[in-house]
Image (cartoon, rainbow, N blue to C red; front, top):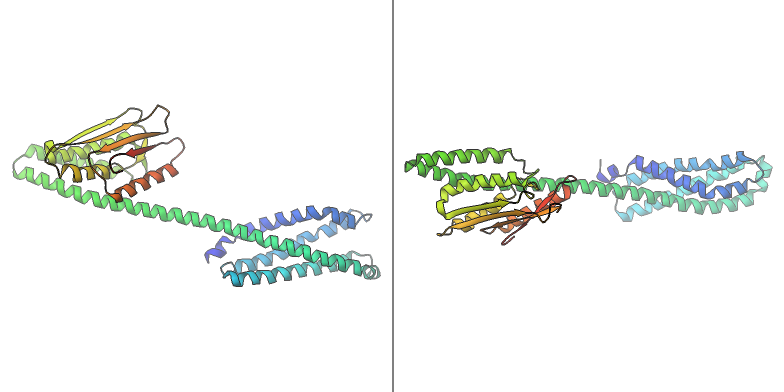
Length: 341
């Protein structure tokens, strides 16, 4: 089924049609009562009951509206205009016949024919207006449904894109990190530094276990994220020795704040890649997390010691934005500041 027809729902059409024609009945009720003054409530009820016939006439109008919803406007609008005119004419003809049936006899109906014709011409204009409003309500419901559908599709596409970025990030990080670490372990074994090789193997195993347990799409406490970062830096510390120094400090009130999993990892890896690996002197990677007041909704995290690539900037900003927009009530976010970020 085309998207336009799927968004034009019968339930919306019935609801808007019933509401519109009941409102019209309420507006014209004084006119109907004046028309049947002295005849009792039966005449008013019979005349007012034609509003339900109008609701029935509106249903084929919606069926046509639903059929042409996907047509170009240049074809769609004339088709709807003709349909509105025919529907209003049919409703007017029904009212004319029904009014004559209500009359006591044919002669009386004949004598009232000029008056009824004048009334019918006015009714035709009224019906043209109201049925046009009815179609307008159909269009409003369709537009609302289309907007909701587009929002859902956009959210799904955004989630798929974000997931693809996360998978690409993990594929980018893990092979590079594993290659260097395994090479370092191999070099230790060759040079008979068995204790260091065993220590580095244990740290690598613990880091991989922790990273695989993380859900990159979920929010995690900042102290868990920093603990994973500490494991990573300890492994790289065995590889780089005194050239890599890590200084991680997290204020107690900031450690409970929530961040997306594996958010700090690309910043730290790029700090090593562009800072430590290219330097012959010791480089300190300093990570600071703080919170301005116990009740502050956000914290500040500084990662210093290297530059992140622009692609990492965009990925991290996007994940922070998505987490801020979709977080559960009571959760908090952490803002990142640092050189190049």
